[in-house]
Image (cartoon, rainbow, N blue to C red):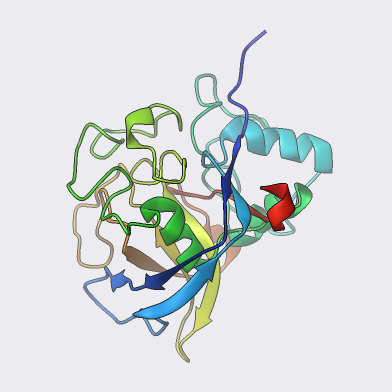
Length: 239
């Protein structure tokens, strides 16, 4: 019987920090708060890993979840199941509502943008999850495919979250409407670097950077490089 990676939770006590973030898109602005502003995180519990294909498959078996519009939903799966060898890779080809459904089933939610940044940077506001210098040995940055979410333990963040830089982008809970576009925010970067960086810079992204992703329709919002992780609200007694 195969041994699949199980999700773990890391405890994050209540903390305050100064949220400031850089908008990483070369064309077009991002009309949402970029700071610096004081914010408070927690207390909460956070997924150690991005949600994997196997974790999402278990959720579907337990809940019977199917989106009303399934265009491109889990299109990398075959006959309702992920491919052999992909169990512990981050689930992709899901949209924000697919991610929210998973989170709600387990009493969780998607992290807000400022929460995600704290999970990656910790109380010392590190530039990268492991420190202040980019280290290409700490994550999946320039390969040709997604990797297991536990493949780079040396890239763990100060609070104990894994795979927060590279591999797959991670969507957050935030949604915005600037009068022209409805969009969410992405974090962490990805292994994939597009041929042209003008619209979306690929590769590893520092903790203080986010990317704007337009929300158009389920079939267009689902893609092969964006996944997610969850957090769970709690009181201090649960920590």
